[in-house]
Length: 447
Ligand code: 5AD
Ligand code: SF4
Image (cartoon, rainbow, N blue to C red; front, side, top):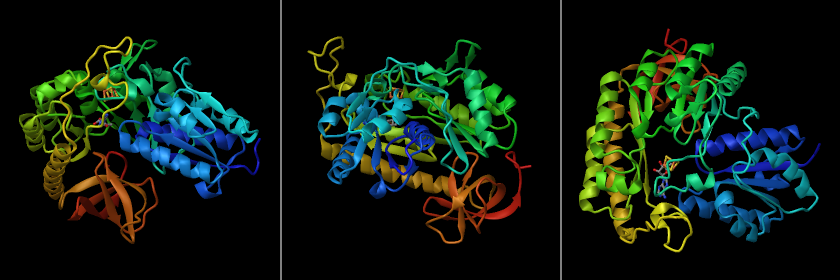
């Protein structure tokens, strides 16, 4: 036990990293370390993201800063896996890969004895038995799979999180039960490609997983999930969601590009028309659903016509939220591999898009998407929604942060404890934020 030694975790990137940080935090607390601000910590743990170059750079800048300040630094996460030698050369004390996070306790103790450690690689089956103490007041992240087998040509994830491994239904069920017991109101299922889920023991696919969680977990809660691949949505999944009690009518469908030509190069396995058809089906089957997306501009070979196709999809689908990025070339990904790299097809794209063109396209896209989001939010005015309280708003005094079952974030007038389901009426929209007024308390279904 390490009484009196302090740690701090800085997390970059996606929910998968948030969940990994929660796991590592719980392990360190159990081993007797105490959590504190980075400036007071003996050990700073940086959980890095490598999906775009900018995030990677930020993690490296922090590392240098904390090393200068004399801290022990554990560098974990996706960059640790893909760039272990370079990271070690920065002078960090330990490099911890994405599938080795369960070792963080031993590593932290060894560091205090001035040892240097690298733990990376995909040779171990990940430990799913660590149920972290929730750090969010109402939402709990639950891994249903880790890694990815899709190898989209822009994406570094298969190289930083390894090949896809799915977790057994029983393990997901028991962790979710425990989290609900601890007061969680929202079970957030996590996987790089959730709808390729398959559990060999039970024979459950993603639809069966949703169906059985919905039926077997008791209490007041919602189920949300991230991220599905548009290619893999099935009629069976829609049917389960439609007939379920707890599953959110929120569909995050990463478009990436609206051009069939670019999608083919990205290895996404769907066309513009197939994506649009999927969205039309959702709009028809779930009139109140929100559809959100991720879009990349400036992938090699994207010409004006291709970008127009992306804008066209944006206009037709009218997304409720979008994460938009400039293409960032990532090491080892198929889109940038060199001929002399062993065992990799030479698919390096030379027709790169100049930075100014990427900037301009991103700007046009953001403007367009923001206008549409504004219009979509206005459609919420004067309507009632089931909302879940999350905590005090920092931006608006005397307001509580809330989200709808369809995952639209907003604020509710007054101060309410986290974890309450409420019927709220939208009285105003400021920017993209709906302002709710309290009508009555209810359960997760609005009853
Ligand atoms: N460049 C830009 N954006 C990327 N994403 C993934 N890889 C890259 C890259 N190389 C985006 C995708 C993905 C989201 C999590 O990050 O849109 O859906
Ligand atoms: Fe990356 Fe594609 Fe896998 Fe998502 S589905 S993690 S974008 S390779």
